[in-house]
Structure formats: structure tokens, C-alpha cells
Image (cartoon, rainbow, N blue to C red; front, top):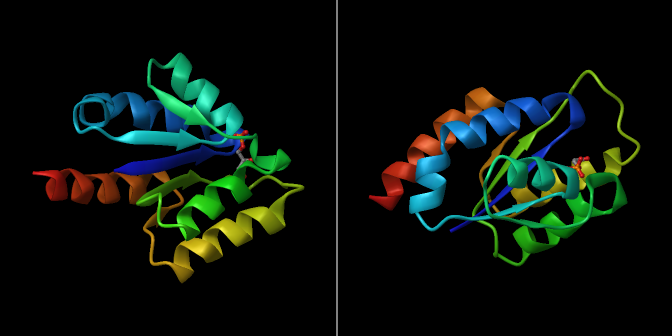
Length: 125
Ligand SMILES: O=C(CO)COP(=O)(O)O
């Protein structure tokens, strides 16, 4: 199973907390993580093995969206910051649209992410 993790700057601490909290599952369940550049760096610094693509504003969201469209990513954890502006908003909307087009689960905040991960853990058993 391959999961994508992405967080805007104001939400990176939340993402690291989330990843640390679920470190055991992610580590043991053979989960492959893919992340946008800076989010991936934070995850790596938290001790997780993560494949990194470009930073979001440089095309990273688009790279993740391409893999979602190709059926290579099973779920996306995208902690968006609704209180900040993003120059690459079209890419962000495109990624969310592609998730909807392909029925790929998308969590845009930690509360939803917790529920989604519980289900993924259940499915792994
Ligand atoms: O901008 C992002 C998502 O839209 C995240 O990109 P980074 O992980 O490179 O900060």
C-alpha cells in the first residue's frame, strides 16, 4: 500500500505528530510513503522512510496527482491550511479533483486522517 502525505507549512507540525503517532503501523504494515518535498523532509527527520517528489509549489502536488490517476497511490493525507494563501492553488484543487475522479480516499485534516487510518489498519488485518 502506498500513501501520500502532504502538509502546508502551517500544518507540518500536525503531520509530523500524526506520523509519529502511527509510526508502528506505518513501519510494520509495509506502507510506502510518498510526500511533497518539504513535508517529506519533515517526515524523514521524524525517522520515517519516505519517497520525496518536488515541493508542492514547484509541482509536487501535480506529481502526486499523476500517481493517483495511475492507480499507484491508495490514499492521500493532505493537511491543508485554509487560513493561508497558496500560489499553486490550481495544483491543489487539481489533486483533490483527481482523488474524487478516481475515488481515492483524501483526508484534508487530522480528524479525518485518524478515521481513515483506522480503516486502513482494519483492512490490513
Ligand atoms: O505545498 C504543498 C502542498 O500544496 C506542500 O509542499 P511541501 O511539502 O513541499 O511544503
